[in-house]
Amino acid sequence: MARDGVPPPSSETTRVAIVDDQAMVRQGFGALLDAQPDMTVVGSAEDGSQVVDLVRRTSPDVILMDIRMPKLNGLDATRAVFSMPGDHPKIIMLTTFDADEYVFSALRAGASGFLLKDATAEDMITAVRVVADGQSLLAPSVTRRLISEYVSGPRVTKDTAVLGQLTDREIDVMTLVAKGHANAEVAAHLFLAEQTVKTHVSRILSKLGLRDRTQIVVAAYESGLVVAGS
Image (cartoon, rainbow, N blue to C red):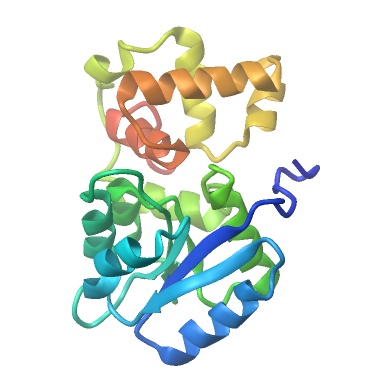
């Protein structure tokens, strides 16, 4: 891992698909990502209704998915992808807005994060590498703001049925992950080895039946462990 937590280019090729109703976006993003030595664009679609067929034909590792499309939006398309049997690609939601009402629902549906369409080329390349590496796009403050805004509001009491499955240390780790901290930051805060934090994260995922770190964040807010705006 690089010093800032961003994975370096992989020796393996990441298969990327792009779903957006604007041809210029598909072509521009496709050319950018296809030029990277560790990525290849395997296909594209102009609407969410074509995503399931796209996944079956091209088996992408990562999908860049527009949220707002005319026939089937990115949220419903994400749900369709995760309803498919077998392994699922990682999904990065694309939006032109930093306060899109679909974003929290998309994270809940299984997306690994989101990216603004006006992000720099470097940020987009990094986003694909981060998600392909099994991480989630949780660090940007705008992501935390959206998660806080679109949860149903502060909980008065914590969901003991969910949190009761976790040890005190796992709850500490879950709290910090939900606030956007990377493993190294969690380790430093709790005076643990980074590998120990990874083990705790894996146990949280297993105990709560979650897919990835993004869903840890969702679960932390929905259970009341972390309060919106805190």
